[in-house]
Every structure is written in C-alpha cells, then in structure tokens.
Length: 342
Image 1: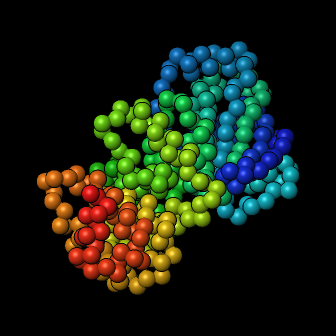
Image 2 (image 1 turned 120 degrees about the vertical axis):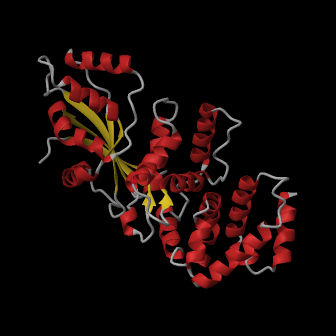
Image 3 (image 1 turned 45 degrees about the horizontal axis):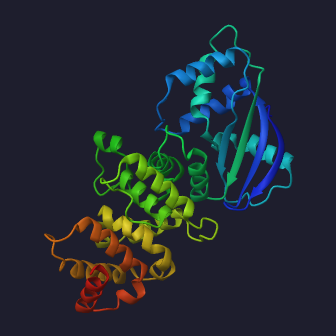
C-alpha cells in the first residue's frame, strides 16, 4: 500500500468529477509521484530559477511545500462512496495519474534530496481530481493555471493532446514535429494540427491564432473562451470527434480534405451540431458533399480575401449545417456563401 492519506472527497458538479484532499510525505512523493512527471514528454522549462532555488532552500529548512494536484481520467469511476474508496482507487491506479499542478515543485524536491539536511519524512499535501474525460480535465487545468506565466493555454493543450489521447487506437497516423524530423510517415496527420483542432473544439471558435494580437493578450482571450463554454452541458467529447475522423479517413478523398489544417479546424467546431447525422452517412456521400463544398469555395476570389480565414469559417458553417447545405446544388451553395460572407 502506498503511504497516503485522504481526508475528504466531494463532487465538482461543473466538470462532473470527484475531488479529494490528501497527505503523504516527501519520501513517498519522490518514490511514487515524481516518476509521473515523465508521463509528459514535453516538460515545461523552469521559468524562474530564483524562485525554485528559494523553494529548495526552504525545503531543506523545513518548510511545507505548496500542495500538488494529481489527476486521473477514468470514465468508469462515476461514483466514490467515501474517502477510503478514493484512497483505494489511487493506490491501484497511481501509475496512470498525471501531475496537473506541481511538476517543478517535484523537480525541486528531487534536487533537494541530495542534500544532507533533507528530511524525507516531512508532510506533503495534495489534491486529486478524477475526471470522466480529457476535455473536462483540461477545463480544470486551464482554471488552475490561469494567470500564471509558466504555461500558456496553447502549451497545455498541445501537451494534453499528445499525452492523453491514445492515437495507437486509431487507424490514422499522427506525428509530432520531432517525429517528422526523424522519419516522415506518408499520409500522417500533424500533431500540431490536431492540437489546433482541439483548441477550436474547446473554444467553439475557429480563430484562435491572430498575429495582430500579442501572445499574452491572446492567451487571456483563449482562457476566457474556454471558461465561457458550457463544459457541463456538452455531450460530445473530442475523443468522439477523433474516432469519427478516423472512420471518415477510410475514404481517401475525405482524408485529403481533413488534412487541410483550416478544414480540420472548421470541422472540429461545426461537428458538434451534426455529429450523429454525419456519423451515420455512407463515406461516399460525405465525400461527394465535401467536393460540393470545394466547388462552392473555389468561386471565392483569392486576391480579395484571406482564404485561410474564409476556409475556417465556411468549413465550420458547412459542417454545422451539413444536412441542409449538402443538399444544395453548386449555385445555391455559392449564393449561401456569398450571403454569410457579405
């Protein structure tokens, strides 16, 4: 049994998750929690060396380190009887956990243990979140880190996209930039494009990159968009969308369309309204409809507009109203595009 104690447990109704507060010690944290930081392949760099040096000094002098936050994604854990039940879950599943808040504190603790005055029996407090989906965990992660400089919303989403979604379960290939630099898999999706699609899905917005706005202000806007979404009332998760994309990509023409980043972004926002309809359509019919979209889109004068912006907006609109718009002919669809972009 892992040497941890859980004091209490309560339900977070916003993210439909269970939250507990607990206590362990430095020795157990280094043995069982510190290895969890390696589950994130893209660790954020230490931003303030002075702060962590001060924390290391304080640890050696006997301070209580600020609490950590540990997280789990477990769709089947819909109910916990009491704190003891939660403790049993953590004991059995700790290796599947994530350090949601406190990676650098654990790094500092690991560095401090090499000093002679280090006391590994000192207490360490933590919170634990058991979330039913990646989307709801990310929502809480954004709220935990809002206002802190070390990790931007986009960075958080990039990390969670890579670490929490098991692309091995899909038929499509997904490669990071690092993997692509070593060996390109022909036809693979770019992980960066999937991350942008996830951000679009979370914010319900296709315009999350704007070079006219400084990064810090844009990050504040993104946090606001995510926190303004109805995470509790959402029935479709991004995992569902990835599964649908995986199925759709069995058709070569659909895959080619989805591999255009702006199409993928528009699709990921619009699909909330048409998921069930498109999910039940034959692939050939979906491909024909996307071909209709391209014919309508090709009539737009590229020299007069920002094509990337228009493609994101119109692909979102087309997927959002797929049942209606896919039944129009080419001229009708073009007239519709003209009306909504006028």
